[in-house]
Image (cartoon, rainbow, N blue to C red; front, side, top):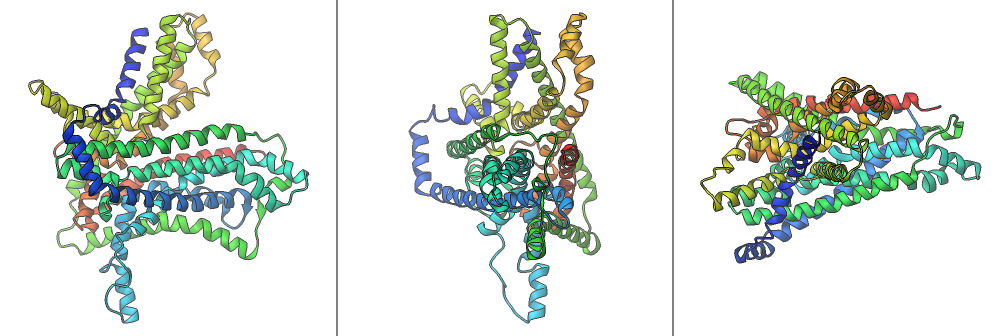
Length: 554
């Protein structure tokens, strides 16, 4: 088992090589690399940094207002439809921001149905508003697509940590609004910070919306440098800056998550009437309904209706109709890649979590302690992967291969990873292993250590314990890990766009390419398929939240 543990630790450490490849570009920087950096600084870099910075600041404000406001509304107050909004506010998680961009662009552009109808009714000519593809529109779309991160964490913090503290403040004579402002919201502040950091990591890593809207961000700059200008130094430098920005956001998120422990309280067996949501009446009730309904409608309901309208028009009024045969090919390619990535990441997560658990309970000699540190370090590397943007991973894979090709062209190693399923699986492993590991570790936390001890006393070897005891108990957690990775791979765009094999287009890539070519009607079908698959984790989260609410004391 030690050899298997060593191999697993080395495999997990290898998942950090793409990040090391990007950072290593600075080690071998020569005069040409520094000249490239100076040229970027004089030309495109200030624009990339300014656009990315404005996007991050505005999205942070937007997701804080929507996410924290909706979480406070459904947790602290009672109003019509509150039970529905508790799970409905998660629906925009199923709608990728780039899919939302396709739907709204078609509806709101000059030739779209909204402007056409308004010009007809009002008797006006010309554009009624500026081009939809703008920085302001991107901010709105990211806010609508990503506020559920803040909503979910803030709602959990308020529901699980605020009740007893609110009750204690009431007993000390504080009024309700003082309890909300001075007790509940400060308790939720770390959760808000963690949710905002997660939303911003998704924003800074985005390529689909930024490219479709023609925005000059660090993410789009990486692709322009690598694919359009064939300048690997420029791409590596931009990827390094993007990686530094993500590292800062990740540090903020980890620090906020650590602070959640100090605010943690558990509800007792009883809770008073004042700890329950306060019933709202009149205008406040209408305001709460509007605060919760608008994000759901604009972030999920309206885009789905617009995509269905596009699909209907394409089916009914197109001269040649949708390429349904090609759609089957794209769907099968997406399914095959997503299922393969899900099985690989889940298998690796199960093995790593089991080895960590078994090694902690074995005799702690020098070898065991070293192996435990190696496994823990591998888990940390896997945990960092989800925060690394797909564009950085793609550059981190391709850049070292370019160095190898230049140094020893006879090896032919780049052919194994460039434009192959192997390279794409490596990128998926780096990007999504953390999702599977988190789900598996959550499952292991519910398996008592006595199970392992009893099996060992009865003479069972370690892998027999895994096969006959752990795997049956972890079946639901492993399935959840597989489904979550499956959905993430189905939606993933940047790394797939660069590393996919020839003639292997996924639904995300096809939807992006069709929308970029202004064939939005044809892009509707793959976009709706992505949204439909994205509903899987939303349903899982909704069920988990309903279970927690049912188990919470009244």
